[in-house]
Image 1 (cartoon, chains in turn blue, yellow):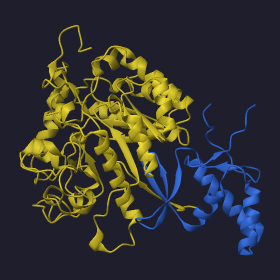
Image 2 (cartoon, rainbow over the protein chains, first blue to last red):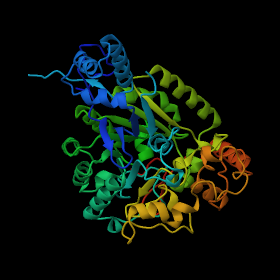
Image 3 (tube, one colour):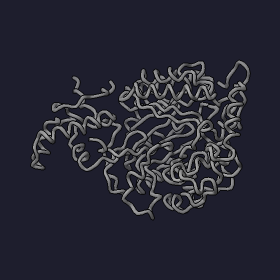
Image 4 (cartoon, each protein chain N blue to C red):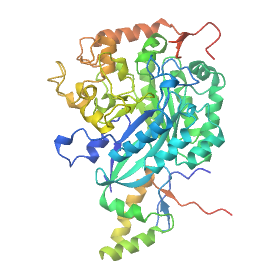
Length: 103
Length: 402
């Protein structure tokens, strides 16, 4: 089955990068990049930090807890920013939901 | 939350500039950094005979092709110098028996791999082996939305049916699919249906690429050139579909430049962000560059490294930047926007690759090519000259090259 398109990101989502989007550190240019069909994207530092947490296991709520603790910042503000960022990535096709294990 | 992603397309017709995005902090002395993506034309052999084939008229013979080990060495070297993506193309790349091995090697050295294929030689097992070897993306060319037009253009019976099958396998294997539709006068009436076909195939991207007239396509220009009305209708259809299908199907549109006002930023500028490697190992600024006579292209089989060839070879430096430009380009405010258009087209139409691309309204030849296009589009000379190693075969009445 194809991965679902147009996912809606919420606190309970467990997002992950689809197989065609690879997060990689580009040694030559010393920047993080997302490799995708016909595209190379340069996510900013915050996006990289969040994307590294997107392993299909952690929920968005877990990620926000982690970031709120790490930066001693208000959870609500981080939640809003993280969801907006992940939704943007999902809308562009660089993020998907972890698939349910079958059988 | 905008701008978390600086988007750098790697395709040659890119509206934005990946290198500029990634290398904006570097010194201007390093303007010509290694490209993000490289096109590897593994072979010129192909079961299709499309009259607009982007390969040169003088095709590389199978016996001159780089060996498996030579390609592996090239892939390792590309990854080492900072290339991030490799496009396996041809001819038909699946005609190479070692394709799975080459994809595996690309994966092993950290390259993101893309297969640009006609798909007619693929089996489900072969595609599955490619996926297991780490293939990241499959791009399948289509010649129409149904077999009558599509198989005639391809010059191969049952080609369309096989492509549809391979596209379905691609999605079953969970690989992203791009449908590449090359458009011209004799299939533009199917554009809406092709867009629907791409949706039905669950494609992620659709490239609507109007034929660009070099090599084989230039020989077939009279049979392929669309009418101005067709182009206006095409732009309308693409625009409407792009809005309607936002988030479902990404559409990239390549306009036919004979009817344009401004020339395309061909290859993102000569020797600026792209090179390809021919089946025999030549390192080229674009896949049509060998059509320009008088330029010598270095090979990966030479004593030079690929990075040296990119930075220092005469062919790459000849039309790099803006210093080579004559008027009207030299003083033009758009000179760093489009870099004077396409060198191959300038050579094909004016006899000098250093002239302004006639696609530009500022070229003294622009009005002439516009009139030529209109005249040829109206003449209904529809017979194709099929692409092959024999220098082309003219389509016969009632029986296409299949």
